[in-house]
Length: 79
Image 1 (spheres, rainbow, N blue to C red):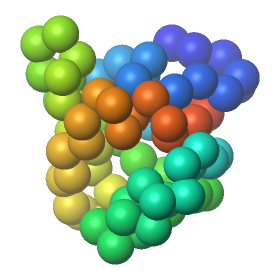
Image 2: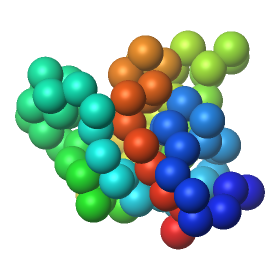
Image 3: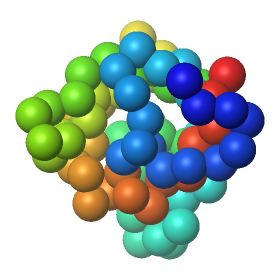
Image 4: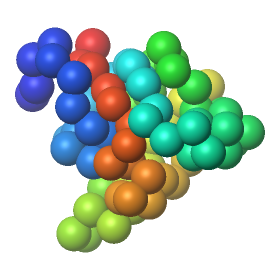
């Protein structure tokens, strides 16, 4: 389990409860907003594909799969 420092979603572990602190790419921030991912939002990492190619997160009763390249620009903090 991580401490309260920021790290990327790609570094998170399955089952972790997190809060999204920032999205470093403005184009991705707009896209993620359209699919329901926002800053200051709580998420739970539900699945991590082999080799971390995809990370599934649960937010507002919706599971969303995120590519590892996108997960690298999402900064999170453990709850």
